[in-house]
Image (cartoon, rainbow, N blue to C red):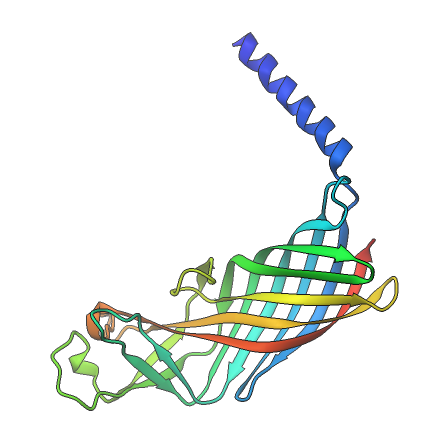
Length: 233
């Protein structure tokens, strides 16, 4: 047991020394921006902090938080394609708000930061929306009792890795940040997001579409512009 404790202490001291030797100061900031599409808009506020090794001062790894929203007009949200079948719910409009924990990476040179970030996990909330389950061909799927009806649904609440997992909502972005001065800059980029709704129960029973699916989603991509404010340099 004493040997084990000694090894742990040595490892902790080594990690602390290595961090002090190679890690540079932390840089942070707040980006306040808006993404605009032909039928949608997506405001966001992101707080981020980056740190990098002194031997590679141009490379920065970061973590942060993002408060975001996505609002669109007429939208179809699709189910996962199974056996060649993909259903959808048709919405007059969709709206979703979220708070996410994110990770990112960027390279810095001159007055530019070029990078990308993605949501790791988060919470989303929004109004209940009704989607029309249109079926014009005779089938006998699990969703048959709900064909050609308006079905209640709402955004998923708990989300993780929305870039990879379709039952989740969240955002990722690629960007270029220009430092116009020590404290203020301009950021332009492209937001890649996913919005997911889940059908609501009827008489305490889950509502399934064909192929036993309750989740419908849409992937969107829109250009983005923001003001960037440095918190610490």
